[in-house]
Length: 161
Length: 307
Image (tube, rainbow over the protein chains, first blue to last red):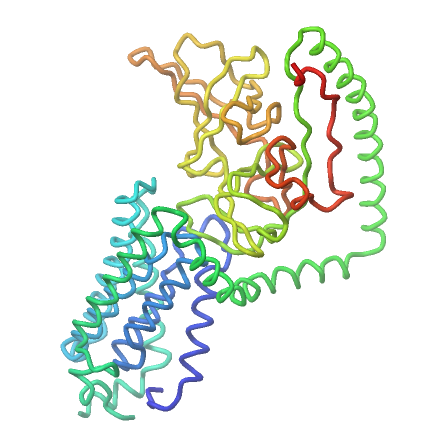
């Protein structure tokens, strides 16, 4: 999964992630939509650091900003921050068991939402904060699912290191 | 499986350390936001980016479009016939009302001339489809499949069959972003159809509710009142339904009462909306004539304006 030459899988996964991020959902579960791009980039940063550079996070953030009509650079800055933190501390995070990692991921996703909310506040956009904890929560669940589906082998290999 | 990260821990491809690259990119982000906040500066950049991500939009819209055409193709003949019948009936009814309307319009025009007041301007409209792209759930926005190439402009009003939907806030080459009247940042000048009482309807962020926060406790308003656009402010054309009052809560301890209205148009179910050109405001008139056929005929003769 983390071969340095393979860019097809990551490229497709990024494209799909972008699509998932703007796919229309029924109103009932709309507020629970995870921040797909943040989840996927955090996943890659923890599992295969340096697979995606900060530059990828930057461009993907700009893509989301354009697609969602947000302030240009808003998602980019939020993504950049969480990917930077995940990258910076990945060695420390990697020794965590999955349960603790999940908490870390939740904190990162919450930070992501908070940065978005903060910027909205600064530019005077009127958004509620009440439901903002839901996407990090669902995002963490998605992350756990990703780990269980794709990383069985890798975690075992890691345990042997 | 290699052990990534260890060898490349300190240095990235560009030769800068992780921290330095983060700070540089973060500065770029902040600069972008500051420029973007002052709208016009980044119009070009935004348009370029929106062309780049256009494939994503198409990809998202694809399954919905496929489903739609499939459902059209697979509908049973009897169902189609029934629908056809119903549409014919509806058309008859609508035409009947239109006849009446034409007479009323002429009468209105005549009365206005008698009163020596300015006439109403005619409107032209163009049908636009809503792209199935979900924007931020906290902001009531959506994208349309018409853009600058169709003459769409920022601030243009959007209507549907039932009433006022919203207005355009950003225009790209082939798409435009619109904001609903229920967005928390939007307000529509309205008047109560029953007595002409003027006020402002403010969005709540919930697509089924509007607030009327500027009505005093003594204001003459009650449940069931129809709110129509007053045309003040010049964005929304006058006289179109905006909503219906569903709750009036008097608050004796405060000077303003809490009035809630329900939007007239099917904000969360629309797939098609009408872009409206106010004839007076068409910039560079010859260039932006919308497609003929879908145009609504302008009404009235220009008499009173000549004064």
